[in-house]
Amino acid sequence: MKSSHEKVKVARGPKRTTAAPSRTRPPSPFGVLRPRSPKKSRAPGGAGEREAQAGRLSREAPADASGASSVASDAARSTAAAIAAAAIDKKAVAVEILDVAGKVDYADFLVIMTGRSDRHAQALAQGIEEALQQRSVRPVAVEGLPNGTWVLMDFGDVVVHVFQDEARQLYDIEGLWLDARRLPVAVPDRAP
Image (cartoon, rainbow, N blue to C red):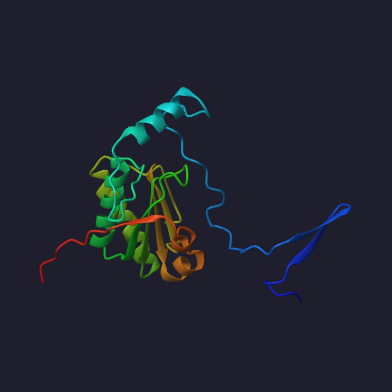
């Protein structure tokens, strides 16, 4: 039996190659995620792509304390902040907003949070959906709601992950995005 740190020789045809071990993750319960539908035609090199890039790059991007700026849209930033606020209202644990704009093509922000149980995770997802419906924002897709172990909500430019603690540790989304900027999450003032 070989350890996970040893190199494994893989035979393919007449050639022999050495493959480094890969970090394996359990498969996502959602299968293969499809990219969201673009708002404009963004065929490679097409006018829609050039307009989208020019619009994003010409806009003044807000900078954080370190001087780094984001190419994310203000609407996406506002949606992510509203999601975080709705989650905190429902007592979500460890809410984080990751700025992945320019790193992936399916979202500008990932909002990650933990629910204490399957019912709490379901209540968080439903609370987020209700809060955003008041802003006339509806999710493109919601997956995993019946189980409540990991609920995935796609709001176009913002993707929400509502985990239970064990699933959050297992999939370690924050660990995958160590280089992504973290946006501050505003905690609302509560009367004692």
